[in-house]
Length: 184
Image (cartoon, rainbow, N blue to C red):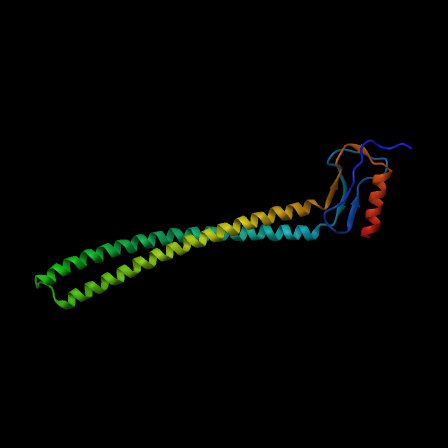
């Protein structure tokens, strides 16, 4: 009885129909040479879905970044409006104390100052909300990248390659025949 010093076991980590067997008993194969292809359409669709999810998240990130720039500009404008309203309020308060402005004028300036403060606060909260949303989108992006990596791994499971340089012997040929019978 003649036996090889080295043997290897062939198996797949995925279930599916065998599409092609690229070797027969007696063929010489090299490390990494494709031996068997298994239908991996489901894995490919999962990969496409994950890639689409990443594109969607990337587009969402671009939109949020644009919104953040807009919110920063709005906050700057609101802060300038608040500073002007506060300065005007202080002037009118001094004028009211000197009886150079009416109570009506002072009340209008005071109301404008409160509105400017509210607008500045609202602009600040809006910016904070957008920054928090950006963090969420970045987390979703990492998840999408992990989904792509996992899907790529599963796509690779549909290809059984040779683990070593060798001649396909009877044992390996029987394994392939068993896989064909088992899956079909």
